Image (cartoon, rainbow, N blue to C red; front, side):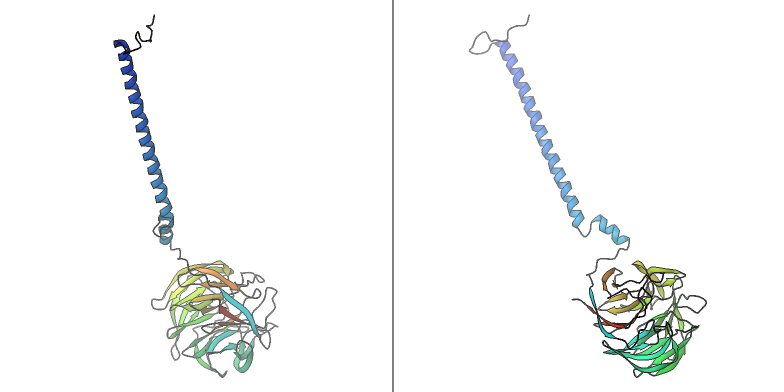
Length: 365
């Protein structure tokens, strides 16, 4: 039989009752200590969790965060301010024209040289191109198209081109429209591109009539052509321009395919390196510098009829962005840079029709 837990006296507890009370007090004290220890552990856990969350949030926004560091190591270009251009029709050519060469020789006018007319026939015209019109001022020794023009020390020069066959001539074209022989390419070549850097003009790629070329040729008036660099692959119809003392080579046709590759050529070392990728394969586009970027106008894919209206901006750090749009999809335009604007002339639309528009391109500020 268990003893009654009721005290014998309601005053002070007896010895047995006191022992039981002492054990209960000790149990209560142990429970209190356990609760306090649990509370402290919980507070420490909450504090550690808060610190971890704070550290994670900071790393996502820190310029030294792990993710961005890895991206930098992979060579991803830093973001550049968005470039936006305005394109509007400012004039009309005397007749539709495509595949002409253009070179800016005065502050307000360019030379528009050769090209194909609406019947796909080569022309010999040399015209003075302004933002509103083109006026014929001279003639080439022979009709041709798919040549390239560039300016060096205020003088315009025309390289290659062809009609039924490619030609190897280099012509000096005066501001008055007079054409005079100035040199020879190493081999006949059409579908070439050209731009000047420093005291030389560089002629990129092309087609001999039998094979595409992968050379970058350097030329100065009075000197023979020399091979200054070699492209990773043969290339025709590339969009080429100078940017920060380098030559930028965008797109073009290699074999039967249009290319997305953008290369950078360093004239001081002769090295050609991969620089960027276009959003899609592009060939038969035009290029011109504007306010520190190289703009690429129109072009098309490998198939005829795939023209685009896009205007792309290639920044000095290699980033490529959509900068604007032409009034309609066009390839095979002529482009002449004038510092604060670019003139575009003619071109071919997606229906195969040769165009007669003069377009003025300015940067939106």
